[in-house]
Length: 114
Length: 115
Image 1 (cartoon, each protein chain N blue to C red):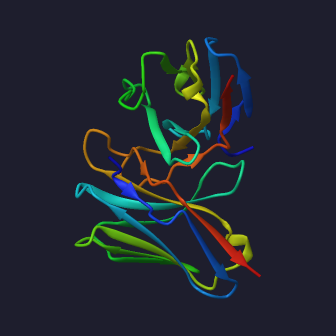
Image 2: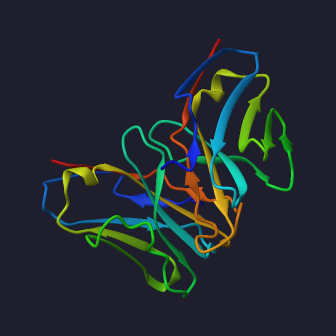
Image 3: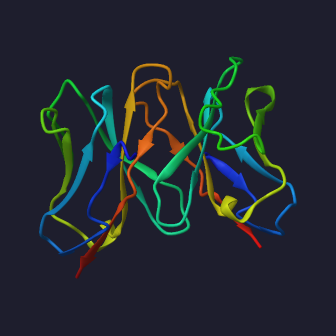
């Protein structure tokens, strides 16, 4: 039973346009959400996070939106650049017995075309 | 380097053999995690260490898997009597403390292939 779902395995966008990566979750106990970026043969790199008490967090070209009622979050990248091409993982963590352990989605492969 | 270091980067072994994977976390990080990523899947939590506390082993898939962390620094993940389904990329991460939303810093992983 997947608690964090990224339903789009891949996404292709044109350079300069907006990339929108989506993530859904089922566990209402999740209180932090993180996005990681992964290049081939490298470990994931932390990108941006959001607390469940917020609905938006912005860092440069990256913005994460959280809709708690819909249990949905999205990562917006604007403008997209070819160097953004990577696999993006959504992850969530919850207060409780496994505090701090991250539950990951399966990832979305983003391709930004020049 | 300043990042999380894992070795070996690749390991190929025969079914039934034991393997040891090593992780050297970022200096000063008290929390250390092991995850694995099977083909086409997300990262799956395996085990967590925090300082001198008992490890959280809730993600270990079977008793063939074990891990230790000596001196609060380097960690070794051991898989005994390997099976083909153990083939995956094993990733280690560390963070300065454990808590919700604390970013974890990952190594580049060990790609394990069981023949």
